[in-house]
Image (cartoon, rainbow, N blue to C red; front, side):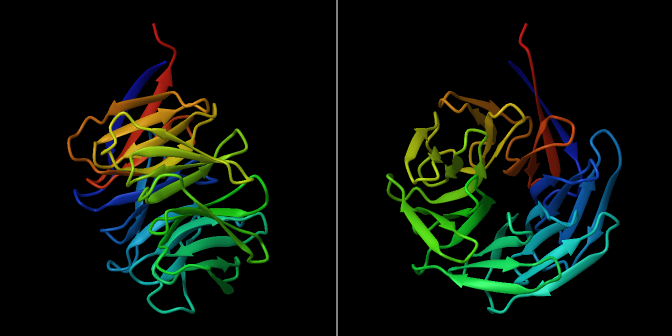
Length: 297
């Protein structure tokens, strides 16, 4: 397959496009962590932005079960909700200074999120009711979270060197990673019934089955600092290499390919399948990048 990469400026340099997702309206929605806003881009069309508190630090964004977009405010310690029409609601959290980061819709009709500074997993209903579940370890820095194929929510523990699973009743199971100091961050459910994650500290891609069996795949550049991961429509997983200014792909049998980004020092972070069939990544320099694959010639 031939890979084509295009960049699209969406904000001023340094605004920090960080996380993105495909909304139910056929647009990409993304956070600007440094700029304090939520952006919306229709591929090939309209670009708009919705201002928040400039210091709130909007971080990860996900589609909710109510067809709104939900996001974490890492610096303001809140959860935000934005409708497709741009109406914003923000919810304070019970634990002060908790540092919410990852967020994802669960199978129970609620949103689940991580509290990096509080060693807790949170749950918020679409009407704003919050429950927090403590983890059985301290200093774990729970980071990204995703719904698994087994009815649980799976999350990375960046400082505990482990992957966690939380059931809908709050029961937590931990799986220690084979590689020391792997520092996992991004995690996503693959099309193969497993969870795939990136090890920013070890330069590896990991795969864990619902019964806890883990496989690790070293990247060609172990110092590339992979950050986020997502499946495309074919089941191939795509990831960002923050320190190496690249995006890469890994098939479910472990074949890895990496691709340089057009602009040096673009700081790729979040990555998501787009509404147009391409994969999109957020670049902190103020751009989104589209990765398109076509049959080779």
